[in-house]
Length: 336
Image (cartoon, rainbow, N blue to C red):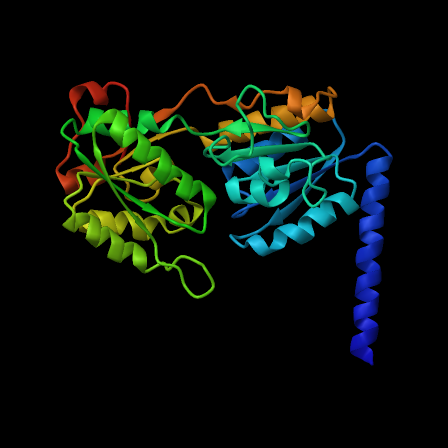
């Protein structure tokens, strides 16, 4: 009986909290509902700083999926029940989970009326989140790009190691952006004259990638005599970046990662990356255009950072005996 009373009291308190938030929003306070894939990292903090330093009265509610897609149905309902003024999404999975693909742009099951800004989405066109970077094709949605074209990564690899003919790639079929990346790089292989050898990570009974399979697949890439490994696009691989890069290093394989901290904090050799702080600031500026200036999201083009950093992990370079050229040393950021 006491347990039942406690549960009823808890439900009442939650209901009252949601009602207070909704009333505050109606009274002029802007409510931003942020859906994150793996916690509030650099881009999320930069976004929050932009909002906090603006002249709007806003509250940001953070929801962290921690890699679990099952939350999105409830969070879509919660965002609507709270009368959120704007939804922020981090990553491809979170954006698809909240906004759906173009096939669902008019579906009442997804966020199609509340303004939505996405960030840290590797390929929003290829993932069918938007129609194009200049016109999203969705009235309520815009966002930021954080990645250069994949052809830039291939050129970066070849600038470092001109003789590259075989490129290795691991993918996670549980992530749409990871599968999309395989298709994009496979097309580039024909255009840029290299061979792509890719493997999907094994999934467990619940459909999640098996972490230990990274080591097994990296050994297969070594047996296939690939010249370089491209990390591609995967939150799972980034989360397990130490295992990924250590396995590559153990097998004598250099890694290019699109994530700068895989070079600065782990053991990838090379990265061409946008600073996540810059991406978060861009997303914050877009949010202010919508909340403060009254801009329609669908009228705002998807923005991208203008500067990328070429990073080289010199400790890894020495272990692999693969040193950057004099030309690269003139512009690269060297990580010791």
